Length: 146
Image 1: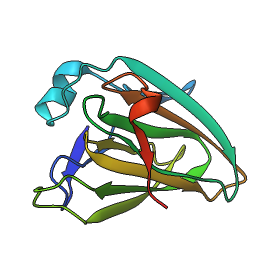
Image 2: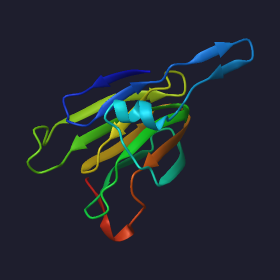
Image 3: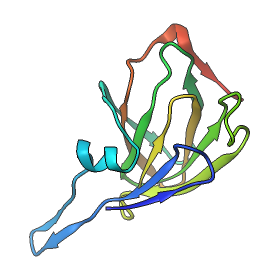
């Protein structure tokens, strides 16, 4: 896999290695040791899946401490424009944002560290979005940015 760091500490773009043959393809969407080597250590405790139609904007969401979530995100169908915003007070990246197109075709993943806000906008007719979380959903700690 290829790992690209961003201007925001802890935000990482991952391009998994894709193995193709006449039957189709195979890729690892998560491998604890390899991802830990890339600075992404779990544990991941919850997987989420959403499906949205063109123009749907989800986010910017985050959870406050003590239930801040790290998220490893990817698209399994369609295309989204994905955004991470560093809202961690005192972070060298505070106030910066990072955006990238994620699609079923490019198979890119983004790691969103705890303390960052995350969202995406669907740019294809429909998109399916999968993400792993480092903490459980805690409605009382959920926040959003308009």
